[in-house]
Image 1 (cartoon, rainbow, N blue to C red):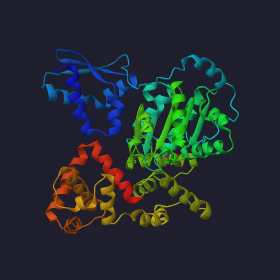
Image 2 (image 1 turned 30 degrees about the vertical axis):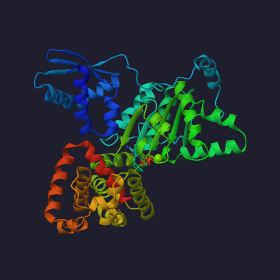
Image 3 (image 1 turned 90 degrees about the horizontal axis):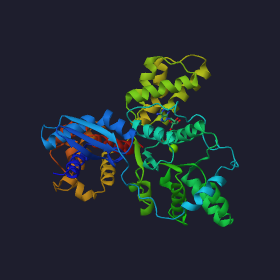
Image 4 (image 1 turned 180 degrees about the vertical axis):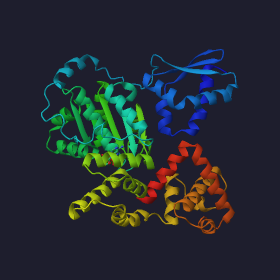
Length: 453
Ligand code: ADP
Ligand code: MG
């Protein structure tokens, strides 16, 4: 086996247990660079990846290597090496003019550079938890080294209210904080679309280009809404190319990964996948509690620990809702001039508990899963035991039990009249697998998010 084949085999194993975003982010452009007896050296593209592999994936890498070559491997180390050719930059010969371009760029921007950034959305006010550590680390890396091709573009995706906009703008603040002469532009894909359509109508394309093709940092929020009509995507394609070519940093957010954005042109999808893709998932209980504490401090609210714990327990979907709950409590307090007690908070949040419980019906859940895995309903409920069908079916049974608290016989019934023991088996199986597979865990979280939204 050559080094290359060995590493391919290792990657093949690792890929199964990681989310796609994690896998591509941390293992792209890695290779075995040296095997010296019992020691293996893995070449990585930068120190950031090195640190991440050492801290988070070392055990998995070591175990996988041992599994494949037998127990001889005793030591794995990581070394930063000259970057292998990776993001094929476009072969457009514009290097000669880039020098003059620089000068026009540094002309003072017409509007305040902080325009469009919410002063509250900074890195220091962003609480890091397991659900967002990858995206946060990537955002930090980008703001320290904007334009470096490994993280350009940075693509952050995740469900509503999970902190994408906050993180995106945090990058803007950090870059301006380090150098206030930098030109930062924050925009949404809708504004980009509107501006473009407007520019065509009023024949002000030059001004449009001046705005969008000159920033050092372009932050585009919610790219899933980039219109597929009127040439907007084509214009964005050119904007992207111009900026990327000039080593300007681009950061985008979306509610899903590039490939899953239905109306997105293929060439944009592939551009978006050039750099780094990082996901944000739903916060766990500890993170929710930590965020609440931070928000209380920000708002000057002094809540007892048991109250904070209660809110974190009840409100699980997203962080915007957590803030909403806090605001309700503040409003109540200001109105009644009494500090809230736990009982009071329970009552205030009661409406939430009820509406929060409002979730999908079993039938809706089946539809959500069918859509998620792109399967036909007939197939999903049919008799075939093919893995591509059987597995999603088991996920449905698991979620019906866990989230909707259906009885096993009822679950069997919903899924095309299966036996209750099948449902029990599925529940146990998925419960076990969720523990060990990041990938599965995340898929289930995404499905849950659809169930409750
Ligand atoms: P998204 O863009 O993903 O829909 P936002 O960035 O608008 O979500 O976040 C919603 C609210 O939650 C914002 O007020 C934001 O400050 C807050 N928030 C989200 N994540 C965090 C976090 N990790 N720490 C602190 N506040 C957060
Ligand atoms: Mg947002």
